[in-house]
Length: 80
Image (cartoon, rainbow, N blue to C red; front, side, top):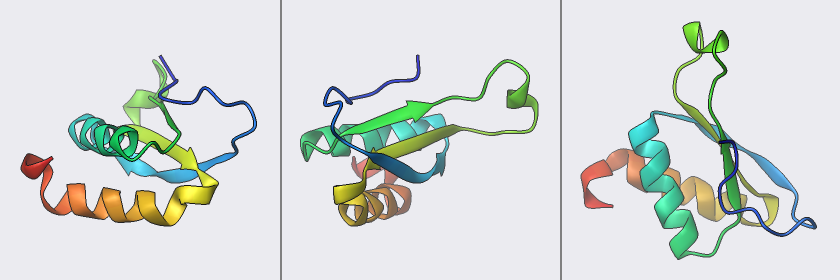
């Protein structure tokens, strides 16, 4: 599955970063709590050989907020 909470076709998403699955899930939870549109992409069957983790994309209007969330979750993954 490659979609998260992205149900508005008028929203433009931008790349937030690549994270471990654990961190991506924690970040996604925080994004949903803040009502920030997001989606994700996992590596394909072959690209998982050289790619790690999950790539997250967020509403470009909320990129700064999303970066703050990602930094906070990365610093304290067990607190989310």
